[in-house]
Amino acid sequence: MMPTRRAFLCAGLAVAGLPVSAQTDDRWGALRGYPESRSSFERLPEFRVGNYSGGHERSIRHHVIQAGNRVAAWNDAPLSDFRYRSGLQHSSPDAYLAQWPVTGLLIARDNHILFERYRFARQPSMRLQSWSMAKSVTSLLLGICLDRGLIASLDDPAARYLPELAGTLHGETSLRHLANMCSGADVVHARDNAVLYPGALLGRDPDIARTVRAWNQRSEPAGTRFNYNELCPLTLGMVMRRVTGGSLSAFTEKALWQPLGAESSATWFTDARGAEFNSIGFAARLRDWARLGHLVAQRGRGPDGRAVVSEAWINECTSWSERDAPVRHGRVRLAMGYKALFWHARADGSRPAMHGHHGQRVLIDLPTRTVLVHTAVDQQGAWEHELQDMFDAATQV
Image (cartoon, rainbow, N blue to C red; front, side):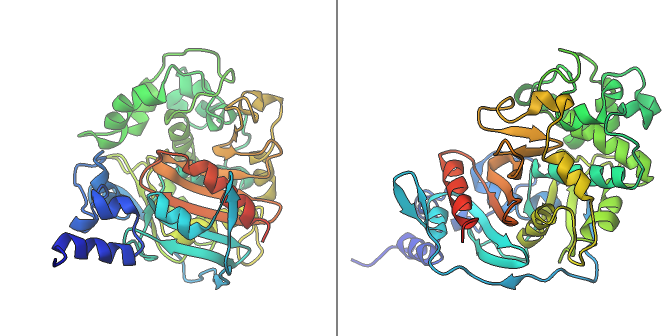
């Protein structure tokens, strides 16, 4: 019997190494060339691959962050036959990629790339969406503002820099409590994003400042409890725009993106007034995400050995004082901590990480300076435990 056209297509996808789901029910839109949707945050899975690798830039306002002339070089040093143990099974990164809907996976140490793969027809030249990993980019910018004396203290209230927020909940909250998601605001991430996003990013006239200023219902005193939400980093973004005198993207370009040696431009979503929605929406190439992780792994030092952000800020992000008690390891989640817009898998602060919706991750091991970048289009299933096992093994090779 002659094979069908669909059989030929699926055979081609198998050769390309695409996951089984793409070969069978076309959940991710492979047979349609990974289409994009122009309806902003389209929820249907078949649009995610296209939207998360450039499509959103054609449907959502954004600034462009230009790379500089000096690129920090990576040396390709691929691991041979890298395997790891996860549960009772031995596996490999390629087997992991065949099982989960991952668009890119990169493992690096120092200036060496040990493993790099792209799936779903994605290419190294594509900018990949980060979702909430943008919060950790915000953290690095906050550290640079402190380093330069633009912000006097992490324990200053936001209204010290934004007088128009005087008397408001977020204006009265310290930058520390904002960075630790402990503002005390009556906001529930899963419930209130349906209001917050149209008002501050996706509506007819989105305005971040208006949204932050108006959100004044308090559920507890600031510094009481970890409560993950978008308003805290958005307030920090407002502070940084004020103290730098321009857009957050312009500051990122000169103070972070070019000094770390990025190879290509990045983008960042904005509201209608050009203010970055810095809770999410930062997109960059996989290798540039690795450079951001490498910057943290090098304790703030760029490719020329100079500090892009101070070691003092990296130390601040990876340690807890009494003022940070609500976000200590084990208080946020059973086996997770939080500090200054970074997640932490270990109580000693040696494993800071950037986390984003639908499986976006930059994992960093400070003792070995190992970095893992993971971009994906879904977060269902037990992938994260296996990814941590892979990363553990990578730190040992």
